[in-house]
Image (cartoon, rainbow, N blue to C red; front, side):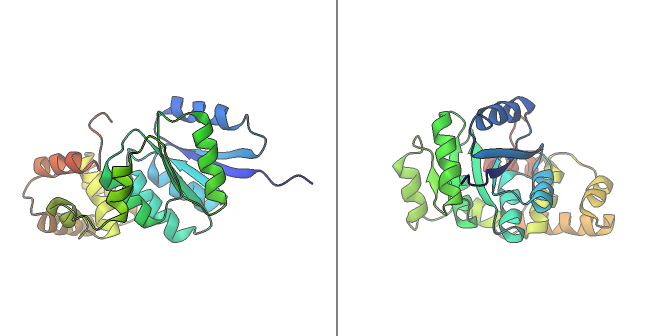
Length: 221
């Protein structure tokens, strides 16, 4: 008796990456691609609509980055497993994503067999980390290493403030942010003031530099 295929959504803002992953994964009879997303907000929406078993997601995506998208997915779609596929191996990313509850973290230089292993591990309730991620990174998560003061400041932001923060540093105007988040412009302005105060910033240029330093946005985007 055949088992039902594992339903997968691929989320990455680069079309060629999504196409490559789709072609790779569709070669496996046990895997079925049921959707794609170009940014984190679309990924959250597709997961809620299609209810996949696994979502494979990049971190550096516009509108809503993979970290915040993963946070929302784990909060609203607990059955869906999240596997991160990123070019970044920053300790902060891995530490935060594991604390959110992702099931895997792979680097984009991983071989195809690693990606398959990560998916199969995820549906079994296991965590799979890319073999190229050093033991030092794993120890950093397991241990009680102190976070930087900059990370501590970012962690004071609410989930909604993090969404507004990313859109601000990506250059979206207040009205557009309000429309995308179904908020009033005055509420967005209030969030902006709170963000500036919590992060101890007084202008958007400093906010952008801070976002790049933390990896919230990618300067290559």
